[in-house]
Length: 593
Image 1: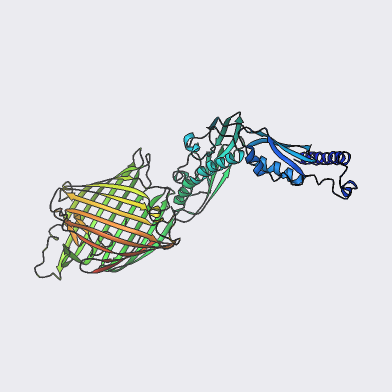
Image 2: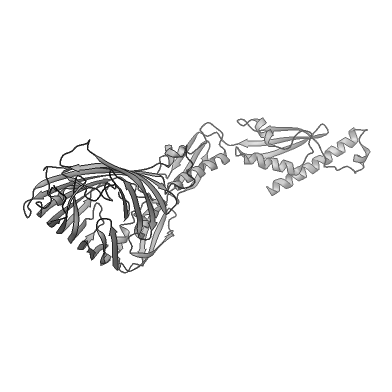
């Protein structure tokens, strides 16, 4: 460009001298002041401006870009700026100028060389998206003159598509233009090695199985971020740092380096709880969530009060298509002065004692959306000390005590988005519970199924509601629903095996276990409205019934409002529900479903 500027300057200077000399010889009426040198010899007027070399791009379009116009003074800086501006339009591979004397002034002719007409656009190296998908981001079309500026924006949009979907390392590595054919090479960097360091207690496989990215996978930052959050959420580490390293012999792969700093996973906990029916209770627990560094959970503890329990469990909750989850445990439970309800009507108070031992194992199928878990359970239950009975009370509780031996199978289809920061998608659970008289007193089959649905409503409401920044893509306005239906082969089941509705986890406007029976249906519907990142307001409606037969017309419902507050101990839940006869307030942690 510098040499071109010098050339144009010399050209204009020589041309001005020639025009000056010809004007002195040919025009006797030439202005004496100009001849004597008092007028600037460079002040040559432009007589005409034209374009040559163009075939697809019109001359009018090019001349409209140029500031050099007939009647203006010939200017080196203006012509140089015009050349650069015409070139920057992107349609031309070469732009020059030809200046010649014309009628006492100068003619300016811009010489252009157009880029080729696009015949094809070809992609290589792309595996995440098909070429047809990438072409939706390309505005340049076959049959038009190739435009550098437009195509640069096309490439930016392609990279933006990758980056928006989490493939932040993908880039356009090369563009070749051969005649009218354009060849674009996409570089999709893959994972070379995953290096885990810093762990002394935790086994390396416990960490690596949480990182679903494997060698040869294309790196996705969105998925990796959620996998990293899940790893940090295990509670084994104070910190997890991530670094990337590019191998010397490759620019298409990266090494992923995870450095963890472990923390103590064994803890002693103090439990303190209050229930509107159970009263005040408290106790101690000892737990270790990473026993032997294998992510095995161990817990032993007790709660004392009107509702008391003592328990111990050992479990390995992680499962995939190759790894079995398992659990074993025992629990002893007592509840003094408990109310017994029959279809919502209080009958009497009683004392309950029970103990159980259980063990289970489960695994995911090859399609990991599906999983199963099989549990064997033995339970002994005793009811006594019936007191404070209502006149005409009905006792269909205490006769149903003794031993119960069950085989329980749960099958789950979970299509929630595992990389979403909020519940998103669909879950379907099916349960079978077979009681057998081998080791037990009862024989029956219970079967029930439930579906849970979580749908973000941001896009649905954004056209007619101003959210005032209360919700976002990561913390949306959310509709959540749970529908459950169950039955049994026997009309009358032991009290401890009956379907039970009422309380903070089913029908929130009623007392716990208000409605019981061998058949059940339940619907819970919530609209979760974020106020900010820490607080969510919830409106809800519950409907259902449990009885000895399925009567769809005889239902009980409630509605209310709740608040969820994120705390270091989990989501604090407060629900206020209006039932048929009274209002109930419930406190707890975590969502109901």
